[in-house]
Amino acid sequence: MVVLECIVNSKEPLRMPGVYRASLVCNNIDIVIELPEEVYSINKDEKITLVFTKDKEECLENDFCGNGYIVSTKKIGDKIRTVLSIGGLLLIMNYSEKEKPLERTDPIEKYYIGLKRLT
Image (cartoon, rainbow, N blue to C red):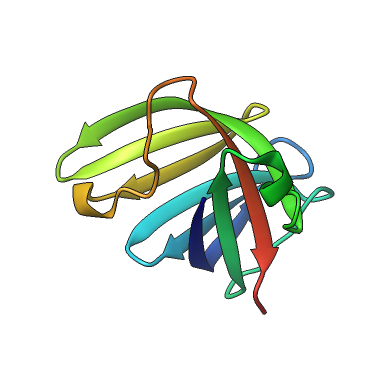
C-alpha cells in the first residue's frame, strides 16, 4: 500500500456536468484527478491522503474507494507521467524516477484508489 499526503492546489469544473478536476501536490509528486462532485468533493487547500493498494478491504477504509487501471506510463523530459483510468475518469501523476510512487506501472495494472480527508 502506498499512502501519499496531499494538498489540493486547485479545483475546476469540467465540461461534463457534475464532474471536476482537482490538482494535488503530494510531496514532490504532482497529481491531477477527475471526480464526480456527488461521489466525492474536495476543496482548494484541503489536506487529503491518496492511497494506492491492491487490497480492496484496505481501500474501503477511506472516504472514497474506486478501482482503476494504468493506461500508460511515459517519460517526458526529466519526469515520468503515469495515467490511470478510474471508470473512465483520469488520475495523472507526474514524478521523478527517484520518487516513483507505484511499484508496478505496466498498462492494465489494477489498483484500488482511496481518498480521505485530513482536515
